[in-house]
Image (cartoon, rainbow, N blue to C red; front, side, top):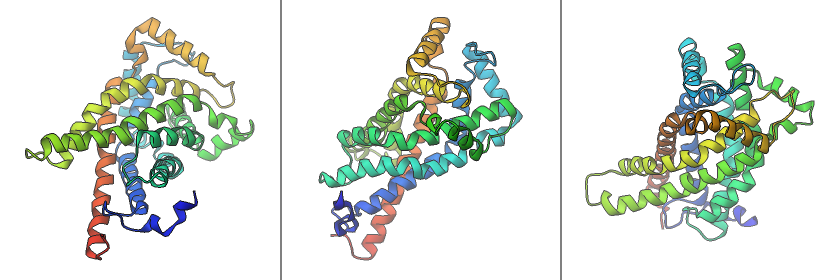
Length: 310
């Protein structure tokens, strides 16, 4: 791990940027994505949260969509940006361990800023305990918005958690690890590799720009990502949206609730918000990589202007 503090970590390599600059580019992409896609994220989670009524009974997915639509129509601005502050703050809390483990392993293992599937797996598992509290806070704020029309202050959520030694902040960790693994394998590693393949096969032989091939690869990866993660995301929502003051829901209980939803409403019960999820995945993935590639280009141009590229 001491290698991360070597001067080589800040030296420009043959890719045109340093490992440190590459890490900053990843954060730039994450901030771009987080800010712009928040309305879609908020809407999707509302659809999933309305899977149950106030009595805890599972309701028809179509009714859940109508209720989510009403929330947006009644308060579009607040709803669109609900949870944005903890999400932006979470870019640091969540992405530092994720990118730290991802790019740190890539650097230590001799990579050149193009993380492997092994790096993605390691990052997903080790970063989950750091990410989960932020996701829990996001969902608790949206629960309050749904029930009262106002977000619950973060300090109040922390106070309620402290009464139980902060253990509620780690509800849903197991689904989160699975979710993070799929996200890293498909989004952080798979999409860039596919984008480079598409660029090499058709991009250079046509007028397709890098942005176009980026969008194409995101559109290919996103449906696979949603199919894999949507049920996992539902488990996470079930476990993280019940009251902190109440008893926690176990993974088995969450799976049973999801199974009941499927039994009652078929596949639409499991894939609540799927259409929105695919749209979100395409937009989010494209925004992240566009922001990342843009910053990498800026660093390369700067390094070139300073004569630092070897």
